[in-house]
Image (tube, rainbow, N blue to C red):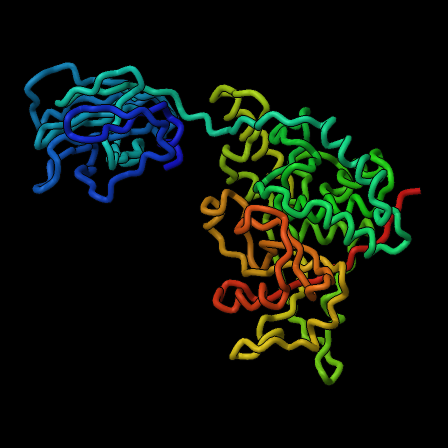
Length: 460
């Protein structure tokens, strides 16, 4: 439950002596033991043998109306004062030491099925509100808490520093002005080796509505922003040209907005950059000994509108904290914008892993030798709906395949390498290409690779 992570600052109780160690809880997991049940319009809490008598429950109103929690008339309590209101989206924490206790849910003076209006989590660890002493017993620890604000606050950044470094790169690296595209690409991509990895490193800048991370940066990258930055650099010779390229490469028709960002490589990034000339699909040019292409074509559909509608609010990243009301407004706007977007279809090509390697893992070097240095190599997986939240909302909704990682193929004195912004190594790095891809043979979800040639589109 996402709401557990940011509802409030908590202090975990360590030890049975009541000694406290202050810490911001990264998560407040629900217990696998559920000592509560829903029966008709009631919610019953009970004690399970061999489990601690003292329990704690977090209850969230998931309906659109205020819910009034009242003591059940069927399970009398020893004391009164249990009535409590929980507004829509709000939560309350209940401490319980009774072996059995019942509550009923009321809305508009009518009994409601508690299961329809409440989300209940029995906490796996005791909690205490900051600066509040936790007593043993049965009582409301806190009532009607406001909903969590999941929008993240962007770390401070300095655009002038990025501008100065890009200008410095053009001024001090002669290869960045070479007439040969690959020479420029190798030099500019090499310049950032060792820079830190950071997922979702870029955004729409300080004026962005949903993501105010910088439009471009030089201090850290994820795999897509690294590739985009290098392509923008090799197709420019000045800072203004580079900035315009970042807009054109990262957004449909260069319109800088979260909704028009090229979020998905297969149907956004590749297709839009093929149209504007920066990329060319060369997957079908790789052939076997008989001269026949080895690629597989997969019909792919991605529903970007539905993805935007279901996106969780932790993808909102702003320079200043916002209220829950503002967060809800932004998410509603985003969902409405997504409603106007139809699903996007494409016939996506990839070279299957079975063509690149034999069953015993031996590489088909004849195929690898056909991949031109400077190519963007993309890792292809089937679309697995329903797992987007587990991957920080990075995965699409639809059918077919999509790209989950990408980098450059480069020729070095050590051989053919894959130059990438790596989440595993936590930096921009070179890894031997064949060895890198062989590692995916143990991951059934990786079906193959897609190849895009980087083109020279120098501005006039």
